[in-house]
Amino acid sequence: MTTYEKELKALWQAHLKPRRFNAPTVISLFAGCGGSSLGYSAAGFREVLAVEYDATAVESFLANFPEVPIWGDDIGLLSVDEALSIAQLKRGELNLLDFSPPCQADSRAGNQDLNDPRSRLWKEATRLLEGMKPKHFVMEAVPGLISPKLRPKLDAQLETFHKCGYQVVWATLCAADFGVPQKRRRVIFHGVRNDLNIVPLLPSGHGRHRTVADAWAGLPPFQYRSTTKGQLATLVTQIKPGRTGRDTNLKGNYFSTKRLAWEKPAFTVCAQVSTYGGLFLHPDLDKGISVAEVARLQSFPDEFQICGRKWDERWQQIGNAVPPLLAKAIGEVVMRQCLDSVTADISSVDCTIAPDEQPKQFPLQSIDGRNNLRNTESGRYEIIDGNCLDHIPKLPDHSIAACITSPPYAMQRKKLYGGIHKSEYPAWTVRWMQASQSTHATPPSEQQLAA
Ligand SMILES: C[S@@+](CC[C@H](N)C(=O)[O-])C[C@H]1O[C@@H](n2cnc3c(N)ncnc32)[C@H](O)[C@@H]1O
Image (cartoon, rainbow, N blue to C red; front, side, top):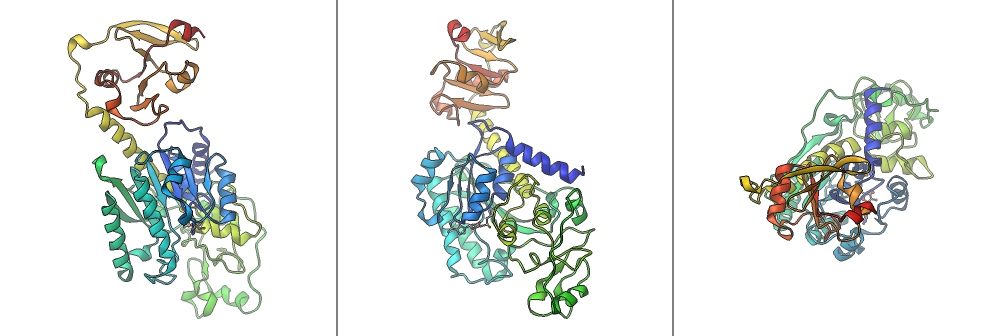
């Protein structure tokens, strides 16, 4: 198995891992088949709502995210209250709002009309951003948005983000720098709510660029689809590997036909298709490429299901997606910042301990046959090398008020052990827990433990 195949397998496995109910949350607007959702899930986020109105994309999304509630209708019909209610969150609690509105209105390839009705979708996303007030947002857009013609639109959008109370960083990222075998450039915006006092970050790329040969290694052989007969069949032979119809005398539809080269990353995968396959020609054959091959070029694991009766419906969903490996890299940066902000919350309380406050250590008792529960002088329990989330459900309701884990993550019964609000539990608890760097809980009685 190649390193690329291993990386895609690991991505899928990370997505399948059961999520703790206190894991940072994400909502994906314009979720498509779930390219960005897969990346955020692999980075550790728990998706609590997806919004997508295309029935085939919804089908794909549900096949890969069976537990995520999906709003399968126009985004304009989703109110802020309804979104929060489905996600079971209060305003301000969501960790990350992910949105990649359809790009045709901003694409260099498409028209750049500021009054294009598709710009409505930006406004809908901003309405939900303002209403839900997530801690972070990530928006993906095509590079056309930073073209001089659309600069006023970009400035207006940035202004809106600032007015909504966000500090924003944006950059053009190339998917090839993040392990995706494709030269796909996208403008990524990361916004952080002002009250969090964090400077938003974006990931920096790494490693050598993967090639088409890397992308397709290990795929079963494909019965290649024939090109259009007649003129195109002869003309495509003029397109050399790594070149496009633009480099030949071909006119009309053939202009944007591209031939992949084994030793290079692919051109940008677009949603548009031609009769022989998404405008891409095979490196060696005068034929199109398969849906499985294009999915690999976008860093979808082979296990990811793309639904749709016709191959072009499936291709379109893949071409529309944020490459999961790119979304994962972005998600990991946002995740680190989410966890850091929890740490910052804790450390804003005085963390120093006076010598007479040091808790006495008591002998270890057993939980689940292991000696890992310690009673402390303070009357709190300390679970050493254990997962408090495994133990909390076994205890009667209300027996645990709050606990802090290592690495630090605070959970409270009041909030179903999700989220943190330092004013709601005593400062000493925070100090003590922070100092000992382990998991604590208010004491269950001996009978409760025995039960
Ligand atoms: C750029 S794609 C999003 C890709 C997705 N983030 C991914 O990574 O797979 C935009 C999506 O927005 C959806 N969409 C377009 N208009 C919409 C609307 N009015 N309401 C909800 N979804 C819409 C499209 O069907 C398309 O799947």
